[in-house]
Image 1 (tube, rainbow, N blue to C red):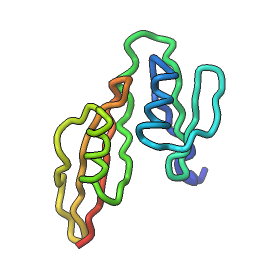
Image 2: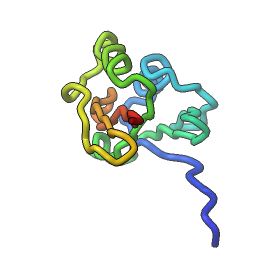
Image 3: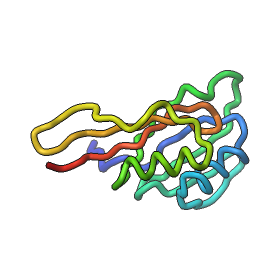
Image 4: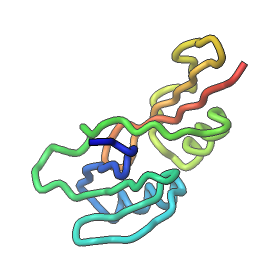
Length: 122
């Protein structure tokens, strides 16, 4: 077996229409297509699937998606201006020899934790 990379990520949602609008309109991801109870987006070459939960209480507990951005402060301001629930200001998570790793966390409409990330080269 040779893993070639990540082909698709899935996020569980309770309201597919609301979540689709958030990922398409608020985050600006390119909508690809829909299937029953699912919506698909392009996220930098990786397909992101939003899927309805068939069980209560499963939303808000997905893996954290880290979205790479060029300017984390500007991206964070843009989310805040769109009334996205943010979890604090952008901050340095760690200083590495060749870059500082910045993060800023926020929530989608389904209470899933997401993050902006920026690698500021020295």
